Length: 268
Image 1 (cartoon, rainbow, N blue to C red):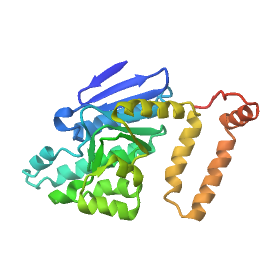
Image 2: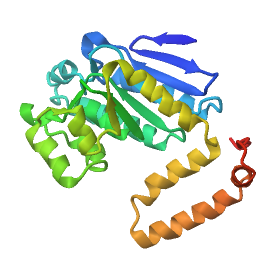
Image 3: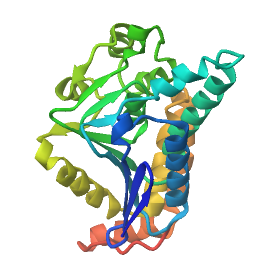
Image 4: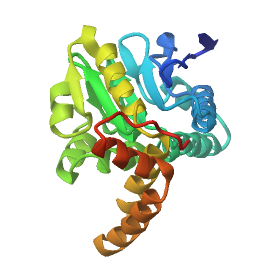
């Protein structure tokens, strides 16, 4: 079943538990307008609470995955008495909320990138748990070229790739290929254009067959431990694994493995 919400297409594949979210504002190169971001946050929030959803895919229509913020809207805001300050504060606050909603979502989120992803669009890719791109896709944080350093995209970029690779992208603003994006770990893989959706859906189906409860535990722990020093990280993850061992799906999974059968997950 498909539902069209202006600039976003929603497709809930209930039979396999995958929720596809497609950016659909080709005229504006799928820019992250305030409206677009609010709709994305709402859709992700609803999917987060829906037990029938096991995984979210963020895709796009057209040859631009996401061009970042709408520069026409940004330019128009400069005409205000405060030169757009209040507008910009709200805009970047909403953007930060969107990126954090992906990280805080208990379901894995995969970016299906077919085309160009720049600035906040590149930030969107980096914020997803996994990302697969078509061979023809390209990535950049080009703000420096127009006098606007990509400071908020930097948060997601620098947490996914090395400092040197991050700084090169941010300081030059140069476009990089899908192969280079894979090399620096901005994306997981790049595939031929005509195989992109199949590759993403195969990965999504693979992950969706795991225990939802365990995926939720693991995703939350992954991001939390990454912000801790190594001693605290081990203390925290030891506690997480202990709690994980106490849920039904852990004993079911271990028994299924020992009995050489497929597990039957019960926890949500």
